[in-house]
Image 1 (cartoon, helix red, strand yellow):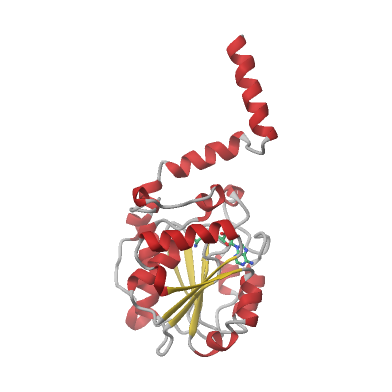
Image 2 (tube, rainbow, N blue to C red):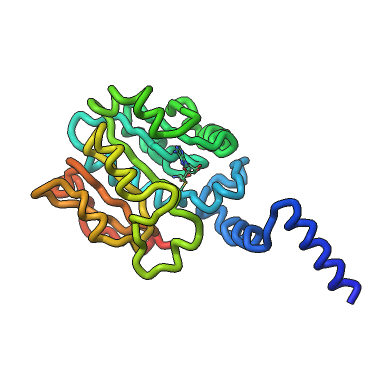
Length: 249
Ligand SMILES: C[S@@+](CC[C@H](N)C(=O)[O-])C[C@H]1O[C@@H](n2cnc3c(N)ncnc32)[C@H](O)[C@@H]1O
């Protein structure tokens, strides 16, 4: 009885401090996959609780980096990672050595510190130009020119928390805090070459609605899905018959 009361008191204390039981469970679920997420985890990778949830696991990030480099439009050698998080995708793009410049934007200062630090752990810190702040504002005020002429935009936005998984078909018009329309309509003002990393169960009719008229849109399933809008050359650059099941997490 005493033990149970002590446990309840501890839980109450945790909740008062802002830690809910769900949050602790969530973190430990991802923590157990830490080496899948970052193979160099033990070399000093930094994370925050929120970053665990949103990060792209290293094998998936490497595959996306490879596909984007192989299929990107001619002359596009600059990449803007609009939602850098703790660096999962940004680091993979930098490690590929395929881009002349990589710009990475993250609005949460703590998470950005993690990304910068993690890029150092992977030896690519000096290959990335970092911006702290809102990607919509930074692209508009600082990167508009380069985005319009030389860049592709990669965006892995927040999906609104773990509940995105509850729906059989995920409605991208209700995605929080940015809907598919918010994202595509903004980024496409700067470049039509946009890759969006979205929930695996995303409504494909909604994804297809933004495909350029008369053009094919490539959607690739990793552990989530990537929609490749614009002039990515699926016909010539796409690696044939790859087994993406190896990338399930
Ligand atoms: C799904 S996570 C990105 C994960 C990242 N691709 C990775 O592998 O580490 C989304 C990130 O976008 C950031 N974010 C949300 N709104 C933003 C905005 N308007 N501008 C820049 N970053 C934003 C969040 O703080 C979060 O770290």
